[in-house]
Length: 288
Image 1: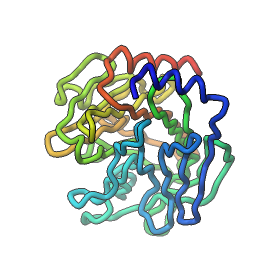
Image 2 (image 1 turned 45 degrees about the horizontal axis):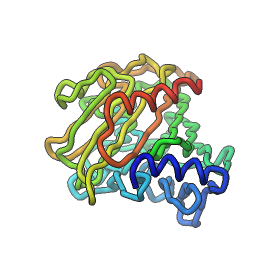
Image 3 (image 1 turned 90 degrees about the horizontal axis):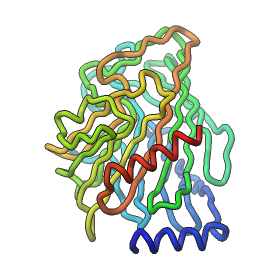
Image 4 (image 1 turned 30 degrees about the vertical axis):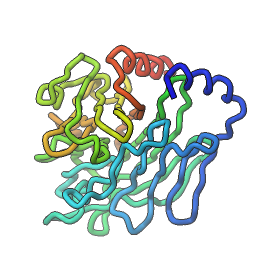
C-alpha cells in the first residue's frame, strides 16, 4: 500500500475502526486498531522486567526482537538501568546483583491506553515505584505510534545511573533483518558514532525487512529532564536504539522525589526523511 492509499484508507475508516485492548490471561495485553495488531505489553511475574514486544509497522511487519541468544536481556522495547544503588535492572544472566521490575496492578484503562503500577525491587527492598502509561496513538500518516510515559518515585535515596553502559533508558533491539542499518536524528546526523551520545529531539533507525525497508524512531518530549537529551544507537554488531538520558550524567533522587520521562515511539515502512519524521515530532509536541 502506498502512502497516499494509506491516508485515504485511514480517513475513510477512521469512524468505523474499533480500538481495543485484549488481555489473554497470560500476562500480556495486546493493543489493536480494529483487527490490526499494533503491539503487545508483557508484564508477567516470571519476567525480570516489563516490556513491549512485538512492536509492529502498519503492515504487520515486526520491528522488535525479544530475548536473542547473544543478549537475552534485550526485551523488545524496554525501560531499564544498569546501576541503581549497585543493582542491575538491565542485565539478567550476567554476574552481579540484579533487580527486577515487577507489575503490581493496573490504574486507569481505556480503549487505547492503560496505566501500570510497578515496583523496582532488589534483594527484598523497593528502590523505585513507577506509574507507567502506554497508549496507542492514531495518525493520518502510515505509522504506528506508541506513547510511553513513566513517572518514577524514589522509595529511598537512589542514583539513577547507567554505570558503564550509556545505552540505558528506553531502548529497542530491532528485528535481526534490520541489523547493519542506517541512522538519522533531528540534527540531520547520519553517522552512527556521532549520533550515539548526541542530544536530539528524536532519533530514528532504518533497516531491511521482508519486502523492503522499515524504520523505528524514538521522540524525546520537550518536558523531559535535561531536554534535549542524548540517544544511543549502533549497528556494527546488531541494531539498537535508545533514548539514553543518563548517557553522560546520572540522576540523583532523594526519598520521595519524582522524575518523569515522556517518549513517543513510531514504526513505519520505507525510509522516512528527516523532514517527515520531524513533522511527526512537531505534531506530538503541539499536543502539549
